[in-house]
Image (cartoon, rainbow, N blue to C red; front, side, top):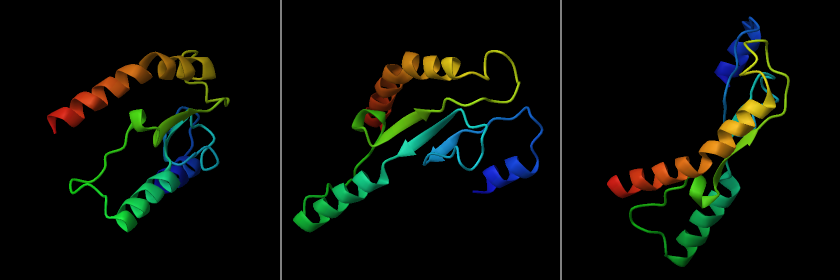
Length: 113
């Protein structure tokens, strides 16, 4: 959790940090959103597939469309870095407006790779 410790130790009231993998709001208060990986569900899928011998040889890819990855938008008071970025409504709007586009882009990337 190095970035969160650094951010706490060197906080200058102008920084925000994105959370990754888990809800990181407890690690650093100026976290407008966290990208969550529902690792419990992912592990269950892999273990069930392993036990039944049905894991695909190429592995399994997870993204927003699968529901195993999601974004949690935090309703917190952020540092005064500008009216736009320091409020929940802004980050919620960005998420709501772009989620379907992100899912589409993930699908395009998966097809190409």
